[in-house]
Amino acid sequence: MKLWGGRFTKPTNQLVDEYTASIRFDQQLAKHDIQGSMAHVEMLSACNILSESDATAILAGLQTVAEKIQSGDAELTEEHEDIHMNVEKLLVEEIGPVGGKLHTGRSRNDQVALDMRLYLREAIVEISQLLLGVQQALHNQAKAHLDTILPGYTHLQRAQPVLFAHHMMAYVFMFQRDIERLSDSWKRVNQSPLGAGALAGTTFPIDRSLVADKLNFDGVCQNSLDAVSDRDFVVEFLANASLVSTHLSRLCEELVQWSSAEFNFIELDDAFCTGSSMMPQKKNPDVAELVRGKTGRVYGHLIGMLTTLKGLPLAYNKDMQEDKEGMFDTVETLRGALALFAPMIDTMHVKKENMYKAVAEDFSNATDLADYLVGKDLPFREAHAVVGQVVLYCIQQNKFLLDLSLEEFQQFSPLMNEDIYKVLAPESVVNARDVVGGTAKNRVEEQIKTAEQLFQINTEWIHRQAVKIGAKKEEEPIFAHD
Ligand code: ARG
Image 1 (cartoon, rainbow, N blue to C red):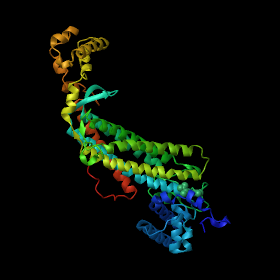
Image 2 (image 1 turned 90 degrees about the vertical axis):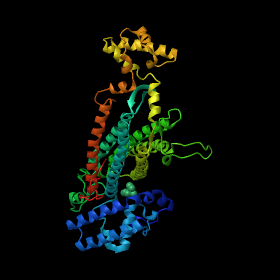
Image 3 (image 1 turned 60 degrees about the horizontal axis):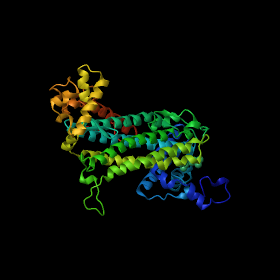
Image 4 (image 1 turned 90 degrees about the horizontal axis):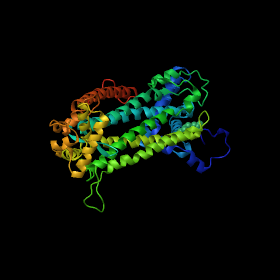
């Protein structure tokens, strides 16, 4: 007999059971479901809707059910469709009919919205923590490579030299925005839908704020129809996850390129590469490729969720059950990628000499020659044209700028003097970009310092939220960043 079987005269077609059940995947919410139920029961008792003895029995029963599910001793069945009804069924098996009082003043509609929010809170904390780990790995590489120069590219053509530290820090700031987006979304995730009932509220004199407080929510959803229909917070998470994936994927693409014989700028550690079944010489950057590849599924989940929601009338519709697999898979995908990324970056070997060679054997100092002429009061547009001719001459002569004699330089402009050689050296070219956010060594050092302050803020935020969701104790040390 189904928990809702009263008005039915026939058993459900077995294919329908299989098709509509979500227990296969929503069993991941068991912990959150029971956590929410416990808070709900405590509130019902505080409001004298449940007697103290009933509440005590239900709480003890829920505890046992939680333990049994955790240890794999509880049978979760498709017949009971989803985690909510399976838990209730197990509870009644455990403590008898009084278990049937658990669902007083509640619907699966507000219950599932609650579970999703409890789950996402944890995911946000965990992913922020992992992102911070990646930031720190990049930051370590930056500190180690304040004197490593490589070509910066536009259009994947060598453009102007930059510090490798500067390049690493670019990603640190991208991941910083990702963490900030996640932390900003917290205030929208952390609102309690409980008390919305099926859609219209409940006839019982419940205390929505009390149950919200027990679960450390920042507030309660203000409209019951919205509370059970809203999956914006899932979309927002998937969008934030998509940007994390975008950033990871761009870095992956660079790692793959840099590992090629054509670039030969880095070597990823053996522990983070794989071989070929046929070609004995191969060492492939599979992790970077796969992280890049998995970006597709994360974007797919975002588009899938948006599309599922777009035509839904208020309030709950079964379509919304489709909110789960994409969200779980996104969390798992990011978790896997980020956990690997930090050590992969940490152990990456940077081929400083090869990078320098790529800068030296190149025209990436051409802008500096133009800027030099501007410094002698030539309008930039004219300077650009002069240097264009110098470059063309070099290409024809098979030379680079620093190979030219002063006489050769002066054929193009009498404004060029002996000091040109110093100006065009890669180190000078880099250090001349002495502007906030520029690639000059002192400016990159500033970025490194700024990032350290941001890491501190991230660390404290993560700690506070971890305490809120019970993942950490207040007095536990805030983990030290380096
Ligand atoms: N398994 C459902 C889901 O994930 C729970 C809510 C079901 N509510 C309902 N009225 N059928 O969306």
